[in-house]
Image (cartoon, rainbow, N blue to C red; front, top):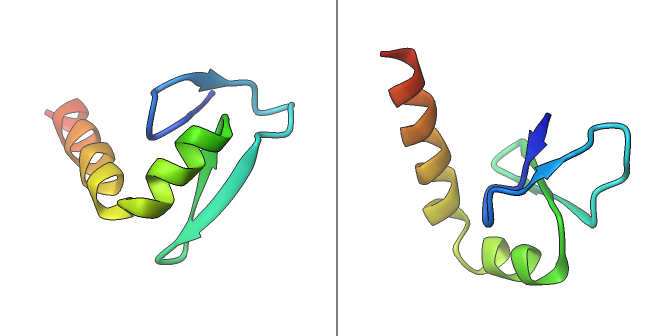
Length: 59
């Protein structure tokens, strides 16, 4: 299941997301215009949050 990095909404991988943004070679799937704008404004904020979550899951 895909998850929007801004709002955390789960998205069906079989349906087209509102936007796909590539940042540092990684694709991020966003559910709506507000999430896309927020991600594009501060991508490092959301990427860092995703990395922290992934690190906590590995513990």
